[in-house]
Image (cartoon, rainbow, N blue to C red; front, side, top):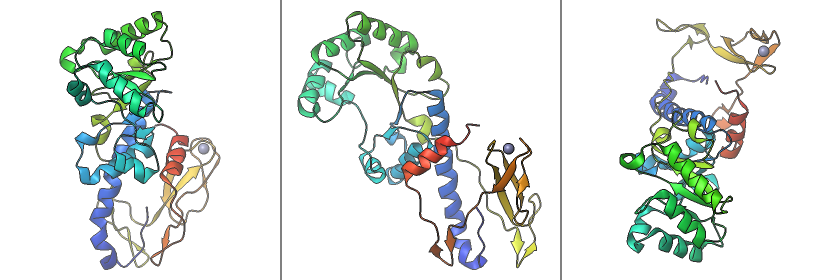
Length: 296
Ligand SMILES: [Zn+2]
């Protein structure tokens, strides 16, 4: 990003601007890492209890842009023009005293509108609760495994066993939804058996990207602090191989150091004299663009 302005007008915005960019970019980047690890399986952002409520929509939006297929926070989903995604909570099962009663009541009330996902680890064994729920609900969409770490052992083996039993009893269409402390390290081995994931903490608490802003030119003269290259820069992008190069702002077209193709200036004006000169893309458009970029 390049900003050309009277510094006194811009100075009060420098710190908040970096805050916006650094945290949301960190979350979007982590969402990309996690969704890449999940392959074709959708990942839903379930991290609302790991973040301050006042910034929940920013976190959910960043998670969505980075690759998550949906978000659980209703306010965030509304801002993004999506339907919120979630499953039956443990609380409903505890209040109704068993998993099948909760799933049955949910199906009766909401079954027409949404896919019913049974939560199968509250009181009983995952395998037996999965079978009881699949038996009860015709066309059950999924069972969700959210086994606490104290009882977990091997999550992959639990999921494989549940899959085996469901298939053996003819419930091949019932999907397996896994959640509970997942990240890019734990997801890949689960892909063979999981159909969807709920990921919270890993994405909500993603490390920030260390962006900084520096003065590099004053009245057209290159000047900068120690350790920073002076002069305005442009980002050049090779449309052939996506290689990125940084060079001085007026360098024009560049030869790509990757494939020898032509790299074009990539930064485009957004704001001129306080007026937007380009419309903002929607979160969906940013998500699509982001997904088309190479995964580094
Ligand atoms: Zn190239």
